Length: 234
Image (cartoon, rainbow, N blue to C red):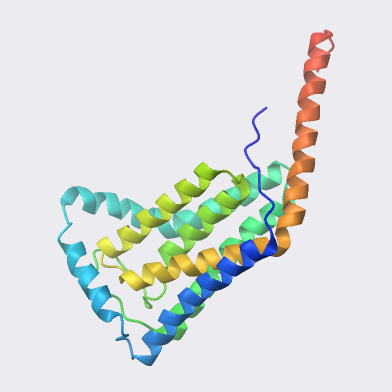
């Protein structure tokens, strides 16, 4: 029987250290944006990337990125709910709580940061946007979901897919002129740091829960095969 979820045990420092570094990588640009009144020291990098993004526009990629626009925020929040519900059905309530809490925490902190930093969006956005550019909510929501999935699945291919998905959403948001480059980097750093910090105290109980639930599922499957082999009713 194939086990989908195999969360791995890691020493605390391998989780907490990158989480804190990523949160610092999110906080420092936010402070520079506020200190520079919306024109931070790295503003030239943002505007240069934005100018390059304009050269990539084609009708085909416009359509593709409109799909990304719809999937990246509301879509990811829905997927968080579906994931939590699925984990409950699979008898993993603690993992479900971790998934739901990670999504809600990333959402709340992203909206708080948008209000505090108060950065203006790039001009000529190709999609409807709300106020507050730093950090990107679409990237934050996408990152939170994909990192949660990668942590719970615990396999290398899941990490690779998570990185590719995050990068795709980052490129999409700048392609649509919905965010500056630093906005999408900040969203990815914030969400990843939050998910890792939440995973740190919950990892042991989630791993134990997954092992217990997995053994129960395997035992029931073997018992069913034995009954069927003996000609007994299910």
